[in-house]
Image 1 (cartoon, rainbow, N blue to C red):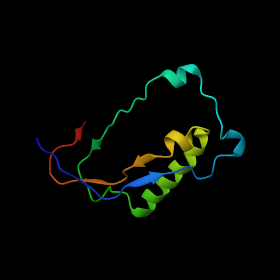
Image 2: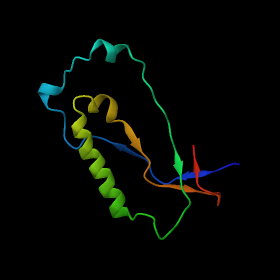
Image 3: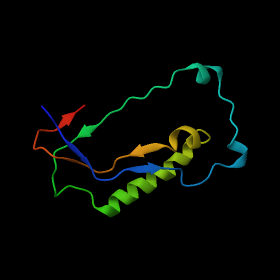
Length: 101
């Protein structure tokens, strides 16, 4: 089954406040330095339902809250998490059942 996805918007989420100077230099442990980077891409597809789609205000609030939550991941957020990409709105081009990949 072929599923086509139309990406309506792409966002790069950054922490809402800059990293304080005393947290800019962080010593990673040996285990952190030697462990491989793991990236597990996951896309969740849902059927389009115009009645339950979030409006632009809700999406904006979610992105703002995500930005504020990145502050909790100091000092790694500027290096690793600041480049987190959020795709808040994806629209399926087919009428296929909900799929999870």
